[in-house]
Length: 218
Ligand code: AMP
Image 1 (cartoon, rainbow, N blue to C red):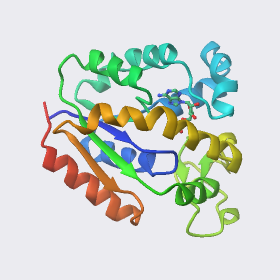
Image 2: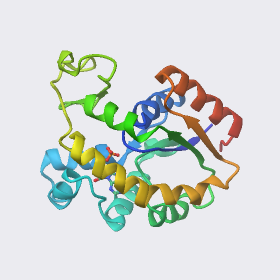
Image 3: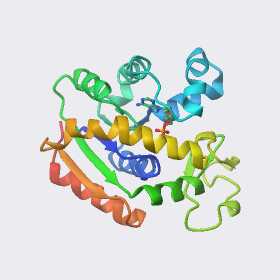
Image 4: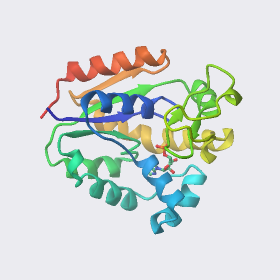
């Protein structure tokens, strides 16, 4: 049965990690607009050139560019049995566009909430594999210890937009532009909020229970 899930939450809430896990459980792709944009920048494509500076300073890429990217991605065959969206939508305009793309198909929405100071602490500690894009949380230990990606052995680096100043700017953007969009979903019966300040396994269980409780499939 298809699962169409939208994971909402600020940078550092753990949505990417949890989205990957839930997507794996359900055998559907995780669609992360952040990953797609980083890949475009790394490959030097025309999209990459267009968005590079915006992503580097933690601002939002224009709705038109993002919606076109997602529209195209959702035509790929692997999305036929569902997907987990991570990092899209981020504005009311994008949320409205997603409703149009869904064309009546059901959508489960889970918001992960974490206090801002904890988010900054986590994001400063995280590292990303420059080869395969896997994110490693280093906030439980010394970030300098993490050196190689457990998945592919690639080098772990800090995302250029994970510096403390850019993270604080990204959080401002989140509260200003993305949090209002949550009002678009929170009145729906298919919306749940989970406490993301718990240990990752507890957050995962809360999300899995929320998905089961919503029972949205099809
Ligand atoms: P993320 O990996 O989701 O934190 O995204 C990294 C960066 O990509 C963001 O700070 C934005 O610059 C850009 N980005 C990702 N998704 C979107 C989106 N849905 N709308 C606008 N910009 C986005």
